[in-house]
Length: 467
Image (cartoon, rainbow, N blue to C red):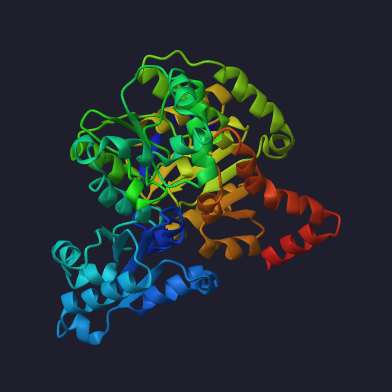
């Protein structure tokens, strides 16, 4: 594309590729660790079991809180009783683990044979006395991070209302506030409460590691904003109270179904903000929440400037370089916006699924950032065809390609620097303090190549790529 053809606004395209990502049942890997009193039962075939075993095999020795309910040929032929078999498994789970909630994860097979999980769950829940949440995290409809989205959307329906929660239990449902108030007397707690502005209740949604949850909660506290709860909570029994009129804000770009469920079914008001990824995104996220509550933000400009100053040793390695996103985890828009702010040029943003309503603020922020940095606005390609992308990568020759694991080695063999996109899913990348971790991942292949230049490896790789 020549300079005269560069788009003046965001340009969207859609190809015919499948979801070139992990299966969404992989969400079990982080959700069972986040919700400590849960048990995840994946209902699928041996293929699903092999995937989980390979993805999380090392953790088997730690007796993780998930299991497979494997469908055999008899089940698929509808010769066996689904209800009795699931009842047997759930009773065994109750006897061995006694969780506060059992999450049934539906797979492609349960979709194909039209297994009525939503119909079976309420009856079985009444029999065994444990809540059963049904989430259809099948690979037919979802990219792998959207597995969390389906689980949280289902769990949002189980959040209690004020009427259903006793007065003394309200404080116990906010584990973060208990942590912040630990060791304080009642008088001191009341004094701390006066630090908050008078605003409607705010619930944040998205599964993040506990240190990041605490960090974002404290960032909002500095602005006088109190977080009433997080979805998911550390324990299922501590799910936040959600009433009509509550405000909600997401921390990840792949939670559009959860946002829709909270708005339509729980009558909440969604705060449409860029996501707190990178110093620029974190500041914009906090400022948007402050503006909704009529609060004047304090010290954010200085905070962001200080973080950028501390990142300069990484930024100088990527400034002026180009990056290409093949599309994998739905974090692409936020990461691209951050890297553009770091001085990079984004050749193309591939993304498995694009919800323009939920990511509206992030898309506007990306366009604004590109104009401010004086770089071309990238094309966003939904459901990209990987064959076509490989041809475009060959033509563009970007300095870095952020891709799924399947294409990393073939691209490396052709002399293209790559980074696994899945690493951003599991790394702590939210908030001001974790921006360094993003750049640590992005610059790793570039730093590696700089170290190998002295050994002459770069010449060898280029010669092999020509062959």
